[in-house]
Length: 347
Ligand code: SAM
Ligand code: DTB
Ligand code: SF4
Image (tube, rainbow, N blue to C red):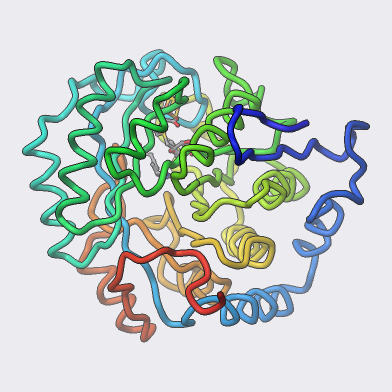
């Protein structure tokens, strides 16, 4: 199965192992090989991940990306993890889109605190054309501040990715979230193919793809491997891969899920690094609950980007000072440039 969008570059979707459409042998990363990586002894897995990491990136460098919610709450979708879905009683109030000057002030503050990427998120199923005009303006102005720009606005329709590209968007974040076979248990208002279509549109428009997922939603190890298989078998695989640990928010259907053993989170980061060697692997939601030791292991496992700033979209994140101290304790320096993330050491 291939996502076709009518122009030169397409993103291929590789079906799960059970499908007869394409034999597993044709995949860059057959699911069984990814499961084998997950099953390695922990130290062996981390050793291999760190080796891959050093082949492609300066080992001690971490990218700082700051998030802002430009349109919070009131979303029509039913994503079982999300505090912004209107149908769940989570205490998140629907707000109008932030005015441009507020976004720019936040972007300047992020830049002054050392962030190189600024990600603008909106609680939409998909942007309306008139909303997109305002986002284009934000992208243009944030880019002019010397920051890399990223947006996550939901599904994109025909021509919308191209408009964002013209405005200066560097990355579009659109997560596959989980393995295909679990998707329908978490979200019913859209399907996997919708997500893949948007990723194809983004890639075709020449915007870098940021796509990852959430673990800790009650999935099995094989299903975590299934998510990584989907991402790693995209052709090309994403430039940037956020790995989120579920932030459990009261009122969402996934509140009360058995928390994931955090060593399993570290394994997921390591497998993402090995299977997508030149991608920025971002330690995303859930860091506040992780503690320093787990985060240190994630960096060892090949994570080289974090969300930086006291808030994610609606939930908390470690405060800036705590992050500075952690990076300094670990001897990690922050990325200073906004040049292409892919292939920093290799051509
Ligand atoms: N509405 C757009 C969409 O769904 O693509 C963009 C914003 S949405 C909040 C961006 C991503 O945040 C989701 O795809 C999901 O991976 C992540 N996310 C949302 N709630 C989360 C939670 N409680 N814990 C961890 N990640 C979460
Ligand atoms: C991603 O993968 N994680 C970020 C970003 N992309 C947009 C969002 C995390 C959201 C966590 C829940 C919240 O703060 O609302
Ligand atoms: Fe809406 Fe995105 Fe939250 Fe889903 S994840 S409910 S699409 S804001």
